[in-house]
Image (cartoon, rainbow, N blue to C red; front, top):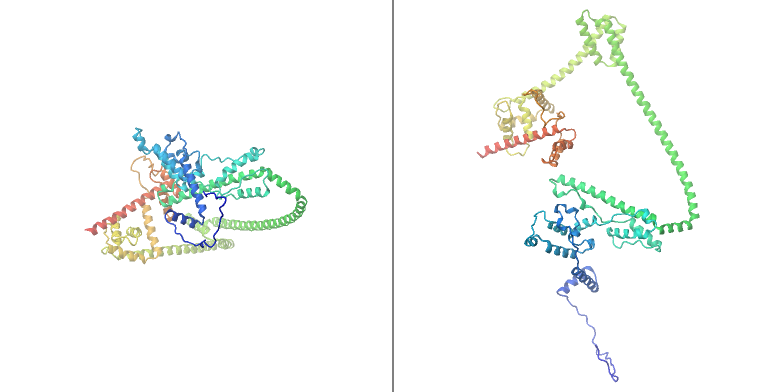
Amino acid sequence: MLIEASEGDVTVVYCNAIAASVQIEVEPVGRWFEAFLKRRNRNVSASFQELEEEEELSEESEDEELQLEDFPLLRTLDPKDWKNQDHYAVLGLAHMRYKATQKQIKAAHKAIVLKHHPDKRKAAGEQIVGDGDYFTCITKAIEILSDPVKRRAFDSVDPTFDNAVPSKGEGKDNFFEAYAPVFERNARWSSKKHVPRLGTMDSSFEDVDHFYSVWYNFESWREFSYLDEEEKDKAECRDERRWIEKQNRAARATRKKEEMNRLRTLVDTAYSLDPRIKKFKDDEKARKENEKKAKADAKRKEQEEKERARQAELDAARMAKEKEEEEAKLVAQQAKKEKEIQKKAIKKERQKLRTTCKNWNYFGDNESDSVKMMEDVEKLCDRLELVSLQSLNEGLASGSKEEGKVAVEKQVQEVNAQLQKEKDAEVQARQAVRTAVQASGGGGGGGKGWNEEELPLLIKAVNLFPAGTNARWEVIANYMNLHSTSGIKRTAKDVINKAKNLQKLEPGQKDEINKKAFEKFNKEHAAVPQTVDNAVPSERFDGAEANTASWTTEEQKLLEQALKTYPVSTPERWDKIAAAVPGRTKKDCMKRYKELVEMVKAKKAAQEQVGSKSKK
């Protein structure tokens, strides 16, 4: 405080004695340096920093005054049902909920832990349940509320939040009292800050328009991942994890759509009941009534012209389409009619040929000749076309019985020659395959040939043990020796030579070999006699008859995926697997699974035997 001057004192200012100002650079250190960096990075002044520090101090004081609410049902909570629990109530923050800060959440957790920790309760003589203790719910609550992402997911489905939308009857008489709290309550979901309030009856047109513009373009951060029914971390494989993620995304999208529809219903209902909107519309309508009427008349005339033009185009398009359909229908009827005429003509000519031959007793003097000629006539009816039948019938009608017999026999000879030519071609093809197989059967096996059983077995083994298999040809030879019934022991050299010969065969010859093997298999397994009278079918393979068609690559992939998706513990497992493989029954899937298991066992046995030989 300055000393008061006396009455006789005079204030004198010495201007020359004042030194010039000098700029001095000061370097902050310690906590002041940290504050300086924060201000520089955030581009704020020192005064703003002081305000933030004051807010932090006020928050700390609030934390000190934090009051927790007791949760009477805390000790009865089931840790397995954590998703349906109120985590704020577990920590005693049910009265604060989403407004609670992280410091308040941590302080509440600390207080709850000090009170309910199992070690403290155990020391007090309380019996601890173990994994089912309610303290796990406290741990789960702090885990969710301390993580911003998980907390936002839980806040999005806050069980205490009121999702109700007032009906038109509720807001008709007291609009502002009914809808103002609802908009204020739902404003918490906005991705943008400073959402405008509903206002009053005296609000201007600009304020009301801005309010509804914001809410009609409302961007909600609310999401529903907390309600996911499936947890992808529990998936057994990548495909199942992807399936779970797909299901969860679909469920979230559905709930998000319902949420946006709810908000849109709220805005639409409020807009339709807002008395200010009605007032603005009435004023606008009164001011522009004449202008609007003129525009409406002009627009109506224009619309009528457009409607007439559009109707004319539609009529023209409809008529053109009807004409086109009628033409197509006529063409189809004509084609059908011609087909029926041709069919009737062929039937008529066949009947005519049969009748003519029958009238002449099939040109035979005895019953055996007549029967033989009857068979030949039926062969002609099946093989000859319409033109040939007409020509033959004309010849029979214009000639005598002997001439007719000659004509029929000539036609029969031509048909028989054609059939014989087709048969000879088929025989030659089979002979070529057989010759190629015999020619390729001289390599390996100590001079012993390869029979029809060993060739398919070799092809199967080559596909079963692809290139890159350790000691591949020894494994293939061992596999053939284990499964072959010929008794001939094949070496790796025999197998290599035979495989090279098979590579030189044509694709048709390979198909012929496989076809013969399949025919032999069907012949051996065509009829399996029952060893017990009145044997009851196996319950495991009971049901529809198995599909004998070979399994495609796509079906094999679907079966493998279904086996992964439905483990052994799944009830009615094979019914679900069969439903996942279109075109295959339960019996087909079980049989294929057994074949795969036997194939894998055989492959491992062959590899293990070769490995043991190499070790010796």
